Length: 256
Ligand code: NDP
Image 1 (spheres, rainbow, N blue to C red):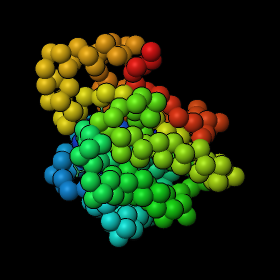
Image 2: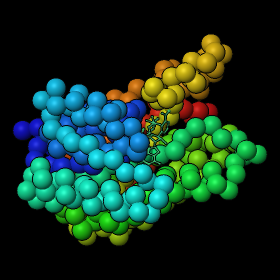
Image 3: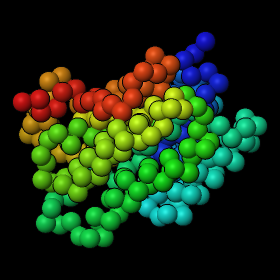
Image 4: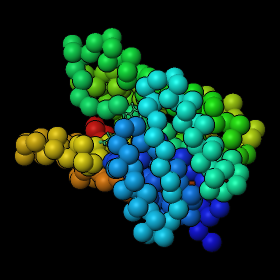
């Protein structure tokens, strides 16, 4: 049997990039995947179509995660969608992947941008898990996509780095709080990963690309599948004894 047969999963921000890769991998392992998107419904449908074409099961749900109401709407839509597709409202795997990303130097970070980063990257996963814990089956999984930037001092990413640091703390502390239900809480920290959004930036000049690769122990830029595979491991029964853990999946970015 496939590793995630009869399991259900929610992947936030699965309309593109790393989230799409995670949704495809969990579906390939047998899970019914809820493909969440913020604004790009057609892109989320492309993720769903790719999963269905490969023989998997998925459906899309849209919700803005920068508002308190949007997070609650997502939890409600996940429950009603699961009921429609499975006859029950049980979720096995929650993947907090959606985030506001991008280069944002300290001097240019306004209070509004700071609040938006923390709303989407920290408040949304915090309350999404709170809303979905009653729906999450015992033995379930909460997996957050963090970033290797938490161990690298990148001034141009200061507020973003802080949001990812908060999610590492969330991971350890929530793991302790939900462990009695055999729910594990872990975080996967990517380094530079090629997506439609990052490709132009990483390849903006030969120097840029060379500098990035020079910082890598494994001298390449990561692909979404390089992140999706460790997520699939943490979602599987093989990882049942792994909790409160930050798993670096960066190819060794700036190891010194
Ligand atoms: P993308 O920017 O390509 O995709 C972001 C996803 O999140 C989209 O599906 C988007 O939905 C959704 N999203 C963004 N803002 C909101 C919002 N306000 N409300 C609801 N949904 C929202 O991201 P990546 O694939 O590059 O990154 C995925 C994760 O990996 C993030 O947590 C990121 O911090 C982390 N990461 C990425 C790295 C990289 O190099 N790519 C490196 C290290 C970490 P929609 O398009 O529909 O609006």
